[in-house]
Length: 240
Ligand code: ADP
Ligand code: MG
Image 1 (tube, protein in one colour):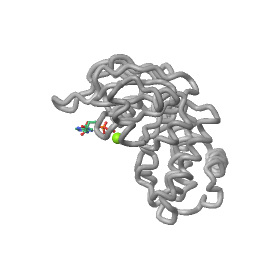
Image 2 (cartoon, rainbow, N blue to C red):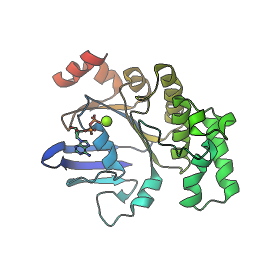
Image 3 (cartoon, helix red, strand yellow):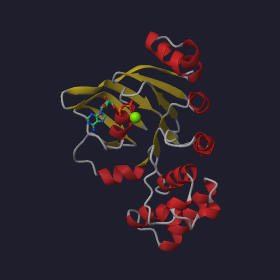
Image 4 (cartoon, rainbow, N blue to C red):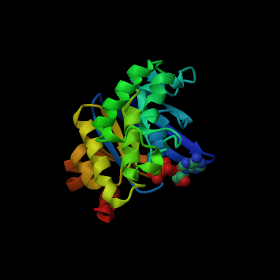
């Protein structure tokens, strides 16, 4: 589903991704962990072309992300992204937030978009909040609406960048539960997270990044108990 080869990304003269390669299979759930500033967000943002790499290639579901000819709007319809901050439109209800892109980009009828949006709200446990505005929702509820909004485009791939980092602790669980249920429903997902227990439970594979490189990757059982790299073990020693 995702093929990344020899990716280099610079901000000015500073190299933040160094020769990053990785492949992610259809329906695979990959968690990306690593210290702050190691390039995790930049890596994720390159996958849906929010950042443009200076070298290397990325293919997502047949789209050549790194080819300037590629229609980025089409690509982004195939790749949903959920950020740390929920970025809901403040003057639109939960339902309207979810309906917007399917109406505008996919040209769904109002009825079809609304039916889909209601179904998604139910799926994230917020059926009764359809007519609430973002400011009337808790942070956890807003993030669940943001997830439903991303799902409304029926993306092949979902990217999550620290989806629970901005939440009060008591709201982390409800958002992780929604992401877990998506993982079990079989969707390709790449999740940057500091929630190690969650990463261990949900992922098929863990990718450990440090200083712009994928230092080590493998199944969670291996990374969390028998990591090969000293850098991985040092990081895990601090966060576990
Ligand atoms: P992480 O998500 O792992 O914390 P980031 O990908 O956000 O790391 O950042 C990697 C490095 O790139 C950091 O040193 C950060 O300061 C730098 N960086 C990120 N975005 C930009 C930007 N838009 N301009 C300049 N430097 C940036
Ligand atoms: Mg980040």
